[in-house]
Image (cartoon, rainbow, N blue to C red):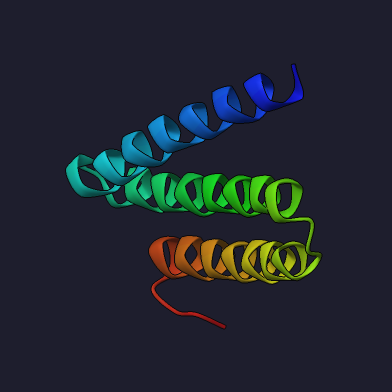
Length: 88
């Protein structure tokens, strides 16, 4: 049963990844693209967490944490630049 759940989660994450990439490319507004890019990075974090379960190595979890932190800072910087036209 564990393998079936893992494969279902992998397929679901792949579909979410494709949908997020499509949203980043085709979104008409800048705000929507910022949100879609943030969603894309969170899906990538989820895929890295699945890799942790598949390969039993904690290195992917470190990469997921770093990616989540960078995505948060990038989203805040992009939103601030979008609203005020300056970064800091």
